[in-house]
Amino acid sequence: MNLDQYLPVLLFILVGVAIGVIPQVLGYILGPNRPDQAKNSPYECGFEAFEDARMKFDVRYYLVAILFILFDLEIAFLFPWAVSLKEVGLMGFWAVMLFLGILVVGFVYEWKKGALDWE
Image (cartoon, rainbow, N blue to C red; front, side):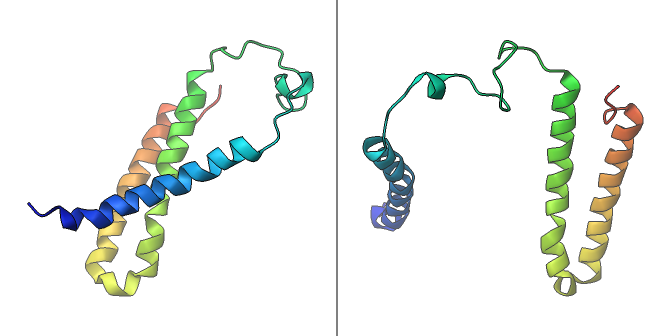
């Protein structure tokens, strides 16, 4: 087995890790470190925290956040398709129409189940 072929990949990984780690180390070493009571105090929207940080959130918050991410990512798939619409032809058009149909069915299902309601 010839390991010379993996040298560029290993070099790429090492350079990537170095680019991520070196600025953090330099900032830690060269940056000022003068903590005081104001800097170490909890800060939340301009005033002191009034509840425990470990309080439970309503499940609906997480459900709406997950649905937003899901539908947002689905819509992100439409941008490359719109750019290459002429190249994909009629078959690509109908494939995306099927994709959008499934997306709309899922959205209507979530709407009817009340997943988007706050009350």
